[in-house]
Length: 256
Ligand code: PGA
Image (cartoon, rainbow, N blue to C red; front, side, top):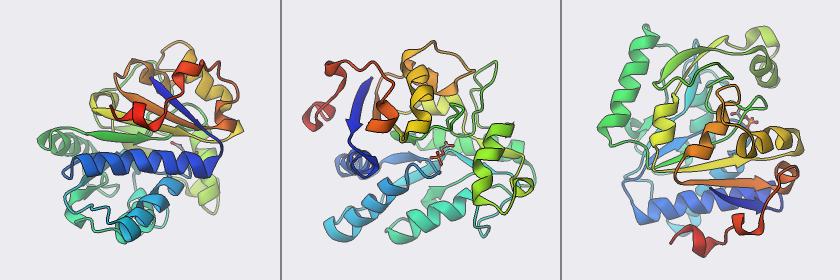
């Protein structure tokens, strides 16, 4: 595991975006796994800037988002499809057919999950997966649980997630109770993972996830077992960690 501690949110976002951009420059046909939430917004802004100002080319990129609320369609402002269009996809030269988000309105969500995994497999899996983390340690919508679920699946959201995400809705009752999320197999089989965490509020959970026991009760802890994960934290998020100097990597060490 390689850990970068950035001085603040802006630097964290720049570092994460630079890693994603480098991946696309190395392999124009990259399959990206993407995340929603407030944490990656700055990285998406920087990617849009690099598209506009530095010719970063998304023309051959495929993307798969981690999750989507069940019951929300692409035109709902709180759907993750809408989020992706607003923050990234509508600003870059991506082919709309190659930007995948689970369909929250699918008639048969289980079939949608199977189809989603099949599409990812057909494209050879995810090359680079961007991940954030919820305050309860979830990645995607893989909530704390007794087991790690391998496949894309339907989840019941926990009360803490419903509460945390209610800030984006008029009230808690409007937050969907279920979602479709990628499972741990796709995430753990991604060739590279970037894990971004920002802010003091998550400092204890991220320390537990990266330095504590590996358990599905703290879903992000499984990342300790991934063979190529780059953690990008801001100083606030890193404030509880017992970092050793040799964990902190410079750019040239990241792309050997
Ligand atoms: P946040 O959400 O970036 O808005 O904190 C992350 C998540 O819930 O995965």
